[in-house]
Length: 144
Image (cartoon, rainbow, N blue to C red; front, side, top):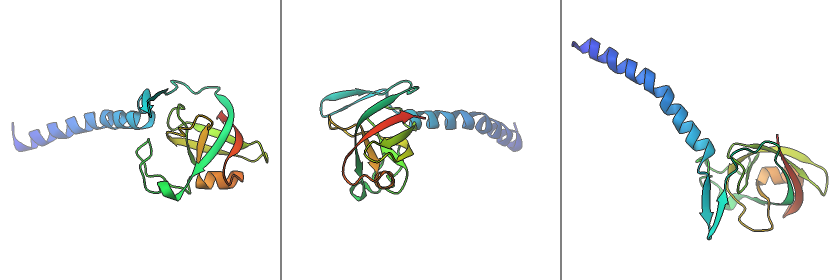
């Protein structure tokens, strides 16, 4: 085999394998593990979030988490419309409605938490601000 034939073979291998590798990496990043343990409690990630709706208490997190990696591997951005949920699949889009004032927004689940028994969802600073939440508030969430 000459030099150009070897290069052509390598090029074909890379061209054929690269898309599969990218799909595998994307799949792993967006779905994460099917369960995990925090403080001795096991959380099972939903296989499907279709028709999921719940009411509970929302809290938010801000600058103390800035630049820390989220469960998706991205850096936390307190100005993005994102949230943490213990069991919804990562990358799920959720409509969050503040039951105190009727405001609602759509956020993307990119992290895990909150890990307090009385909390349903942890919102980014910007998401909480748009909803008018200064501390905690009753909310309804629904997958969109």
